[in-house]
Image (tube, rainbow, N blue to C red; front, side, top):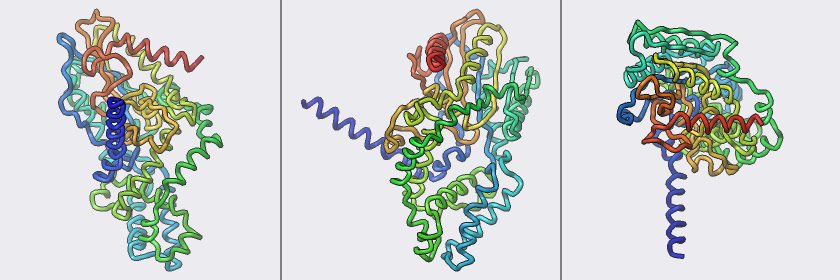
Length: 428
């Protein structure tokens, strides 16, 4: 009885710590609330775990999201501006509200005709990721090593690929580089599965999310900060929608030069920022994670990509030459791939959205601008057909639901068996 009670108290203590972590992290650094609009932070792990004795890297398989960008549509800028401009014309804004309206006008002008464009920060992110990859695993890039790079046809992705390859070429001009951005690769670089997409629009799913959103969508302080008439707000303003729009606009600033001198985060309380993030985090989970609300099926959006990763790795393992596969796409690809692989526990299955963040499912840890997955393969000799590998998420060593050989290193044979079985079971 005493042991059971001690275990229960310990479990409660751990849960309480976890429950605080996302809120505390976001309170300490509000930029984390940007979710998929968060600028790439770079690796927190500076020293990687050495490989077992005698093993050296020979192959890298990568999928990367494009670097920092502007918002993809004018509506991200126009919607909050129109709401505040209308209120201003009726004399319903506070002095802070008027100032925020002015800031939005400046932000919108800065972004004009740059919808979805890669920023200079995004370009530097790609160069830095490539440089660190080269410096961490120089054996893979020696001599005329083969580098095959593929991108979706979206300009920011193609440019991210180009900046990555330019950096690698600066470091070793002898690299044998092949690159492409063709519709032929879209079936695995950015699969569009209308059947799975349709699950997000199911009435029960929408009602489930709406109930959660309603319990967490309080932004009263923000409305009081912007407007001088509570009756007007109640009758004419969709308060949460405006709050979300403003936080999304605040989020993008960290990706552009203007963000060095302007912010919108100052108009929110820490609690409002966290609540808006929490709702968005839940929607990403429902739409791209292993949520029971969508049958835990959404990670299988990237089943073709995972098969391609396995297929190409099998091919490169049989070759004596070192190789690199680079793939460039979007957050709507890398997030479900992370969940499908269950990297760092992102394959979590829970029907309690209130506990999602408390259980450690924090989207900003997965897919900031420039986010990437790197499989790094090691062997003792070219004759080795069952090499070791480790996986890096955003350049930090990560875990998989497999028995490790040593530290972060796994056997490729274990990976193949586990994930091919998982993919085959889904298709059945």
